[in-house]
Each structure stands twice: as C-alpha cells, then as structure tokens.
Length: 465
Image (cartoon, rainbow, N blue to C red; front, side):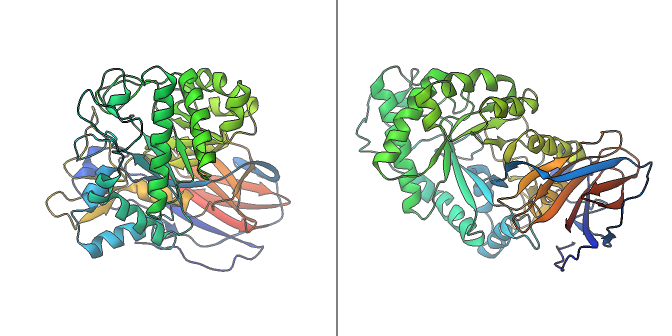
C-alpha cells in the first residue's frame, strides 16, 4: 500500500497523488477487501511552466482570494467503533489508532467527534451520565458520573488517539438529556421539560461532562447542545426548538464562564434544509449572538449552498460540517462543495462497522465505513476505498489552511477545491466523476501545469508559489 513520500517541492514541481473509487457505497465492502486502481498512489512530479494557450478544461486558482480558515478533518469516536476496537488485541488496536492519526501511512485526522452519553451507534443499552429510577430527579447532580465511558474503554480510546495525534481537536455532541429531564421520561423521543430549572440543570450537566472529560486528559474544544434537535425518533433524541436552544446556550455559556472553561458552543447540528430557519432566531438575538461560537450542520437533507447564505448573514460565525458519510468520487465532490460553501471542517460519521454491519441501533442499514472489521476474526480489518478518498483531503489540507479562490469546473470534466496551507504550499483536490480519463490545466499566478486524471479518480496536487 502506498505511503506519503516526503520531498522538497521546488518552484518548478507539483506533487501528485491519486485515489480511485470502487463500487462506492456497496455492501460488498462488508464481505472483504479489494484493491482499487489507485490508492494514495504517488505520481511522477508535474512541471510548472509559463502559461500557454490551451483548449483543455482550465481551473483558475487565485491565492489572493482568501476565504474561511480550516479547523480540521476527521471522524467520530462513537461506541460502535470503540466496541469493535475493544475486541482487538492491544497491538492491533494501537495500529488502528495510528492509521487514524498518522499522515505518513494513515489518514492524518486532526478533528474527532465524541458523544456525551450514548448515541444510536452503540453496542450498549442507551445511557446518559445521570440515569435515575423513574420519578426521581437530581438537580444538584449528585449522581452524575462518566464511569460508563471509563468502563466501556471510551475514555481510554480517546486518550490513545490524543497521544497519537497530540495536536488533534475534540468536539462533543449529546443525543439526549437524562430521561428525568424530559417530557416523556425516556431517552427516546420527547423534549426538555419546560422551566428555567430544567434549562439550568441541563447546562450544569453538560458543564460537568466537559469538566469530567478534561479531568481525564481530554480537552473538549467545542460542543453542540443537541444532536439533530428537530428529530424525535426511537433512539436517543430530543426535540429542541431554536428558542429553547437559545436559552440553553445562554445558561451553558454562563456555566462555562463561572467555572473557567473555554469550550466553544456550536448551535444547530442538523440538516441544511432547516438551517436558516433554526439559526436566525438565535443569532438575531443580541445575547445569543454573543454566546454562540459557531454553527454545526449535517448533510442528509438540503443543499450545501445554504452555508454560503449563513456566512453572508453572519460572516463572523464559523460553520462546521459535523456529520456525514460519503462514498466515491461523488462524495469527494460533495466534500469539495462543503468547503466551497464555507465549511471549516468535515467529520465522517462512524469509523468502523464489522462485517455483519454491526454493532449499532440505528433504524436503517448503514453503508460501508472507511474501515470494516472481520466479525469472525476481530484482529483482521480492511480499508475501503473511502479511506483513500478521505486521505486525499486529510493528509494534505493542514489545520489553519485557508480555502482560496478557484473556479469549480464541471461534473462532466473535473471539479475541485483549493487551499493555502500555513507553510504557504498550495493544495488543489481535483475530482473526476466521469467514466473517462480527463485532462485539465491549472493556471495560477503566472504559471500552469497540465495533468490527466483517470476515470473515477481523485487527485491531490501540491506545489509552492
């Protein structure tokens, strides 16, 4: 399997790597591995030359046009993945974690999403950090504990990730408040009970969770206040109106400030289709605007273009793509669209299912993850092509990079997105979704290079100005 080759990039050289799709999203990936045509394959360096006339499709890259700054690219560290990891021996588990963190032989992820309590992707009975017998309450949080996260090796796994990637960032999301805080007394469905005392109790609960993670050496840089707040369904969930989330954000920011916590608050954490209607009541409120640090979005309904609308309305509030799994070159292009519409991050959802598509409690059948574990031989696992396609971004787009101007191109030829890294190297990720090889030209600041991208393949090109 190809590894990243480090070399000095002169002003006349363009480094290139290719990865191909292969039966994207197909359940055959739960049956075993297969080799796509290109898998992070290093290509001969291309040459930057003086501009010339060309009939090729042309990508115009304009580094002077600077857009959002990147926080990072990563995945989720939910119990389904951790439960599968726990079946491996220590050496195999360590090797797996290294593949998430390492830029030379792995993905080089630097942003991880953890759950506050249980999500639907878990092998465990649903739980929170303050579960009580029916009819009891605990506004003082005397029974609060993250011990289940310790017992289930969640804390240990996140600690190991941070050791492997010490500069990585963590953000957290809850799927449900404790049942005693909810209108139906259940982690499934329902909403937060009315009244300031319940808003205050939930704010305290979240503050204690952030402190407890910090006490385990897991600094939580940001959190969302409710995963998918417009969804009520038969796994942990909680309807939360924007007005109620505004109240919670104000109370939670107060809790953080009073206890010296710098964790940022991201609102919404749900689909493009409902985003403007949800965030405007919060951000149009002066106090809400002051306590909110960012906007989190999922991509299961609607268009990424709404992120550009939100950016135009609230340009000082960063936007984060906190959940979506993508497949193939169409997925790589969708990811380019996130960034072209002001997303400052991308996080995949669920890192490893097993070959029996387990173990989870979601209500549908998930597609293949970037890793699949052999359910009969837990120490055996394989990469799917999505590992490579994700790495075409995550290995090369550094935290702190800025998206820069580039013409999008066309799905009938090639599409792209471009960045400038903190070391001033330029990176363009180019996607060929067609069934034919596509030649193209990149024109940037008085220089050009010409490349050919095989059918169904993503290319990453890096050079210095």
